[in-house]
Length: 125
Length: 125
DNA sequence: CTGGATCCACTCTGATACTG
DNA sequence: CAGTATCAGAGTGGATCCAG
Image (cartoon, rainbow over all chains, first blue to last red; front, side, top):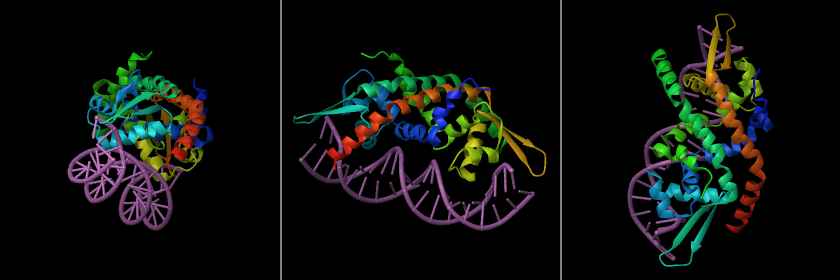
């Protein structure tokens, strides 16, 4: 038997809750944006510089989604040239803890997983 | 400042670790399969029945990926008709805890998020 | 500086039909 | 029973160009 009967939290309602959060953070950049904003207010360009590889388009899309979900605030300063600052909301900050748990799991088990993949691949040509 | 300086776990190496795990579990069915197998050995059809909406094709793909990653074992019994049983490995079981944390976060904050989305949508027609 | 608009390549998923 | 094969639709991400 399992120690985690709480898997009902994942399977409950046919998985709608977990599906919702994965739709939110399961994409390529969302968690990186959230982690980068952890504890700091930051403007668009700085955010882009701190996330290597993200394009303007994807950064725009990602912060828009996060703003819509209420996980960050977007502040436009009425200046020329424009200055826009992003900051996590209280709700957004609470996401960091479970996300870090997941990252810890990834770091801890990546070696095992990569070994398993390698051995699987030689057995299934 | 933030309580979670451990965000370096997410941002470290440019996000490769977190990207890896999201590629693994960020799809539509993987976490549901893992949660359904929690603590039980189960065969293909039973698994499919317990995960409403999953197609044969997607269940096959999902368990194959999980097998390759070493998160579950696939046991083929040499019988007719065939019987194939799936079971989480030790590594697979360790994934459940962080996944449940994420699901808890989703359940806790879904009301807030849905309210935020609704208010965002009326303001951005 | 911020980010909208467009185009394209690729992937993910589902439906359907077939098989040892 | 437990898959494989094929096809089509939707979504995602990247590159590029343009604008307030």
